[in-house]
Amino acid sequence: MIETNLDTTCHIGEVTFKNPVVMASGTFGFGREYGRVYDLSKLGGISGKGITLHPRPGNPGIRVYETPSGMLNSVGLENPGIQTFLQEECLFWETLDTVRIVNLGGGTIQDYIEGARLIDEDSNRRSAAGRRAVDMIELNISCPNVKAGGMAYGIKTSIAREVVREVRAATTLPLMVKLSPNAEDIADMAQMCEQEGAEAVSLINTVSGMKIDVHRRRSVFENLYAGLSGPAIKPIALRMVHQVCQRVSIPVVGMGGISCAEDLIEFVMAGAEAVQIGTYNFVNVQAGADLAAGVERFMAEEGIASLSEIRGIL
Ligand SMILES: Cc1cc2nc3c(=O)[nH]c(=O)nc-3n(C[C@H](O)[C@H](O)[C@H](O)COP(=O)(O)O)c2cc1C
Image (cartoon, rainbow, N blue to C red; front, side, top):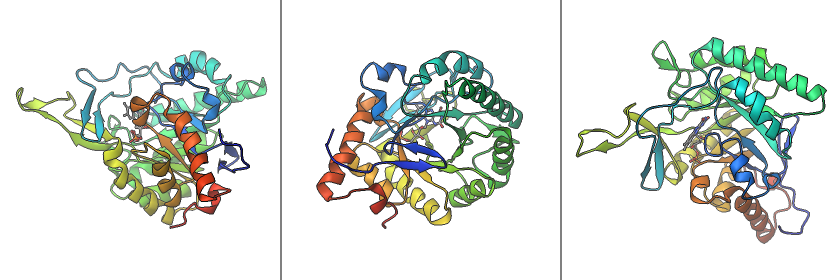
């Protein structure tokens, strides 16, 4: 830790993050295992593994495959369901001194609404008892398994609008909507989220990709396509974050391939309020702690007192 008066704080609505380093959904579980390796209070926040109203077993077959500078995954949102999350994982989350974000997925609009309502109710009950466990909902409309009339919610703005509107109405918790790079127009999508009352947008989720096993003459994945993440997608993510920041005035949380402090600073310079770290957690188990320290080091070396000095500087 560097002993200075550096201001690394970030803000989404009333929520303050002590630094811009947030762990990305699906790459950090609910934080328990990583908490045995380093102190999670070093993190700006954690976005938990995506949860759905009902438990999901996830996809059969191969789920992850390493690619040049990245990986493909087809996990299929395996999760224990919201009730188990609220009963078990929230007890752990109550103890954490970092921003706790529930990543909410769904199969139908009703699932999303009911899920948001349950999280909201539980959150109110815990907060009233002084045992807050959840600070924000990250609405994942970009899950490749979520279909509406054959079209993923995250692709068409008009379909996504209904989900965002209904979930917004179902919770008073701050709402961040996670966007897909596979959207027809990601800046349009972000603008819609702002219009519907979201406090923030986060982007990008994985980029749809493919891997063929030439000996078996078929896709490696049962679902045919899978989601590409890691350094391979960083230039795309950075460009999209920059485009979205030009279009909306709510905070933008950037992610995609961040693997060092300089990567993170690029996203901030493109306009991101904070960032999320996904695949790099699989490369460096201490990724969060290292990046939080790396940001401070970069700021000290470059004579930057507050991240706000360089945010959106482009
Ligand atoms: C194995 C794996 C599981 C993921 N699961 C989720 C999930 O449940 N919900 C979600 O919104 N994003 C999920 N993601 C996407 C990441 O949160 C992130 O958006 C993406 O991987 C890009 O960031 P990265 O390049 O730093 O990994 C998952 C990614 C990976 C690699």
